[in-house]
Amino acid sequence: MIAIDQVGTLSGEGEPGATVTVLDQDASPIATTPVQDDGTWQVEGPFACGTTVSATQTDAAGNASPASTPGVPACNDGSGPKRCTPGQIIVSGNSPADLLRVVADTGGYRTSAIDASGSVTYNGIGYNAADGLVYAVAENGHLLKLGVQDAATTDLGAVSNLPAGTYAAGAFGPDGAYYVKPLDGTTMYRIDVANRLATEVGLSAPAKVSDFALIAGRLWGKHNDQATIMRIDPTTGQVDAFPATGVVPGGLVQAAGGAWKFGNGDLGLVFNSSSEIRQVRIAGADTATPTFSLVSVGRTEAVNGNVDGTYCEGAETDLAIAKTGRVTAMTGADSTLAWEITVSNRGTTASSGAVVTDQLPAPVTDVATATEGCTVDGRTVRCLVGSLAPGATASIAVTGRVVGTLGRVDNTARVEGQDADPTSTNDTATASLAPPPTAPAVDLPQRHDAAAGRQPSAELQLRWRRRPGDVRGDGHPPGRDRRPDRQRGAAPDGRPRDVRGDGHRRRRARPEHDDDHELRGGRAEPPGRRCAGGRARRRTRRDPPGQLHVLRGRPVDGLHGGRDEARRDHRPGGVGCPAADRPARRAHDHGDHDERPRADDDVDVHVPRAADLRAADARLR
Image (tube, rainbow, N blue to C red; front, side):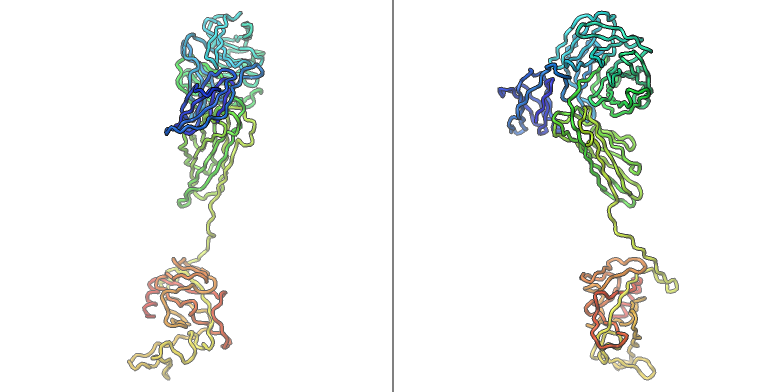
């Protein structure tokens, strides 16, 4: 992709590390440049008006792409404001002066020379959108015309009625005239550049500014020694001063040698001692009480003294922003959050640069970002995004933490381009984060039998029905024992008979019950430790039929429910019967009908301590 501006700057996108070659209309190379790590490239002109150009790229292996669609640089035909693509700050410095082009880059600004010949000393530069040229006043009082395309410096001659001296501030006013002012005093001059004629404009008060810029019909600059922004009406000479503490620095060494208006209407300032560039938003510029806010702070390469600045506006550019978020980790009650911000250029020309501001809400702490060009101040993330070619994107990653319970977190990020933006509806994006879904809490009151010395445990409920003919409640018809060598019965005194002849009496049969049966304290209550199919097992292959209800006590690891699941019961020392063999509950009417366990039968088992279960298990062996 290739974009060509009115002053001959070519820009586009390519493979990082590849080499872009610009071709003329005869496919002959006229310029080469590497593709930057962010995938963008740019070639500064000048290119002759009407020249047809295209571009190819060659990677490190020597593979060359086809030539791009040819484009034709626009000419300064006098039909409207002359713009630069991307928009660019023009800075002069040093003595004799150099003229520099400053373009937004990731985290700061990139500087390239327009004219580094240093042939003459000048100051008070101002960009004239009517002809696309920069004007300045030389130290001898002559009017200079500085080319942005051809880097030529033309001495237009002396200006009538303009006293000799140094004019630090300069800018074009609302009437198309060039206004200049010495650092001190209460006099400003209006210059008609076509006729090189100066007219004095008296000021209502001293305005100690090193430069000013036209915004909303007034000239704005920073006071040299104070954290104050000055406003001058070029028509009436009215001077107003407004405090701007926290927005611009104060002190004797904090003079803003250059001032300009960005394409979006913000005030730009470059500081002499630090080469710091600040973007300041003015709300209510045409009112008696304007307010100021700091949009961005960046730096350019150092300029040694005699600093001045102006701006060549870029074309409208539609920048858009998108934002997503997610919960990346949860440690105890704390949550770690992450957001991804993407800025894209949906316009047809390269953007001049932008600032992304992300103000995290109060619950979020430990805000951080590792993205180049971003700074964090408390919960505010501010990122400088460089020039973006049409279709190009830039990504920003932000992280934070919420201490305690995570509630809903709504977070909005904003992108503000340095150019005018025709579509403001896509300049903000919001990401909403909510706690991840969790299982509902279950209230399990503890059961503790202090007298028996038992620990709190879980209690489940089992219900089953008897088999036909089971009148004993142990899962077996009358007259049938589990083993052929054993018979049930009792002596006349009610004690178990010795039916084996070994001197040992059989253990008394357990009482019969119609009610629910439980395994308590390690002892199996009826239907006892027998199963319909044989001896009770320590492991079950299928969970009890019906629902599994935790009534009270602590959960037991490995205890599962669901009649269709074939699992093993991992309770310590647990005993049970397979679901298909589980003894049937005796019916109250002692009927002789089949009542095998049903799917809706409930299960009730009391799970005591592991020691009790091992004791019960030993007695069953």
